[in-house]
View 1: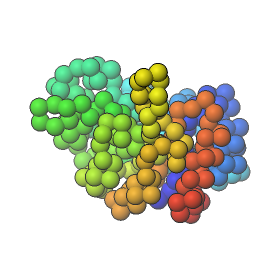
View 2: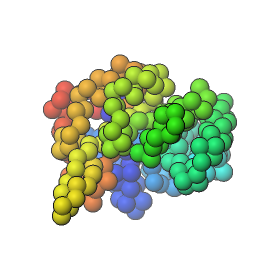
View 3: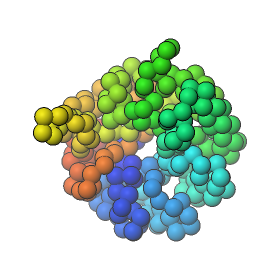
View 4: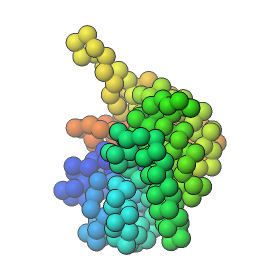
Amino acid sequence: MKIGLQLFTCRKQAQKDLYGTLKNLAGLGIKYIEAARINFDDTDIAAFKKAKEVFGIEVVSAQIKPNILHDEFDKCLKFLNETDCKTAIISVLPTKCIVGSDETLVEFCKWASELAKKYKEHGIQLCYHHHDFEFIRTKKGTRFDLIVENMSEDMNFVIDTYWTTKAGINVEKLLDRLSGRVRGVHLRDYALYRKFIARKPSNYALGDGVIDFNWIIEAAKRNGVDYGAIEQNTPHPYSEIAKSVAHIKSIGYEEDLK
């Protein structure tokens, strides 16, 4: 399994200077990138092509808002093809589906399934990336269950270790359940911190939280996952990425970074 980085981690840097950001990431031992929060235009394509030639950087996936995947299909397809990327990801549910009824969510699943079919016809696997709000309980399970049941087989998934842990979901069991339909895993640590008398959740560099990434990576490999992407929402991305990379190496997965 390839292990790299979700570019959301360095989104501010990438929006200012994508090639320079990729150069810095290569220096930290990052080779595989899940593209996100960029324009996906010709300038970005050129930056990735140059980074591949100079540093061996590979785009393993691209996480894009659903309306852009649909409304700007040709632009997205051009980015994916010219960067040799075979995986596109729906980044988040539309707001109307987050706050709306189960029926609204089912309609979205039908719409997304048709979009997945369209991308598949062009050699691209479309995936769905969840947050924690999909795990809200319904009468017959969770809203995530509803998504899995109503997405066609053309749709795969990207599982996020932070959001699943925050929602109280066992990541290993989820990977086993969706075996063969998970293309990627976002490797993002989780822990609570104290704010006055309250306890608040936050994400951390790998190894600084409570998640055991050893068994998650093993579960991912066992279930045919292609890649893992380190991710963190932090004002200090490079130093935090360095810590996460060091943790990956310390638990025996240095070869997966290469």
